[in-house]
Length: 166
Image 1 (tube, rainbow, N blue to C red):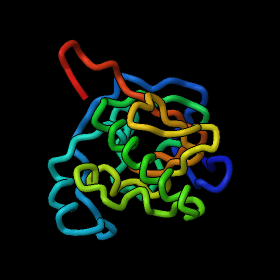
Image 2 (cartoon, rainbow, N blue to C red):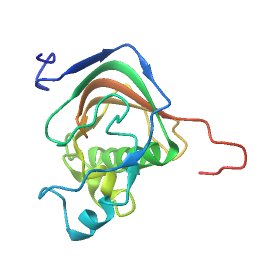
Image 3 (cartoon, helix red, strand yellow):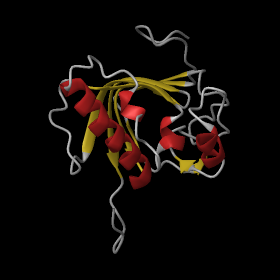
């Protein structure tokens, strides 16, 4: 099936739903597109729910398996924190006049590099407002990565367990 717009074919369409309780699993090995050897080595041990393992395992981060539109994805804190740090870098680059901020949202991502290496498109929505370290929801106008293509997608995080800190 063909997803609406320019995001290409998908096997599953999700519209106006909340996805939560997603399981974390080891990220697949990086492809040649990974930024450097350190990212490739880290990816083997990195855990994430972003590939939406419970919905369908994407063997290649370049082939979309799921198309999500106007939905919310509730992530474990560590995944949300990776996206929040990317959004903060995206916002700084956009404010500096870098247009749609290109891939600048990846620059300086050391700890989160294994997760961000699987994301090809990341655009903060103009409706998001100011992103800060305290932002509890991220609204992206476009997201593509880990077998998922999305438009108007909201990311938030699961409540932290008692005694757990960010």
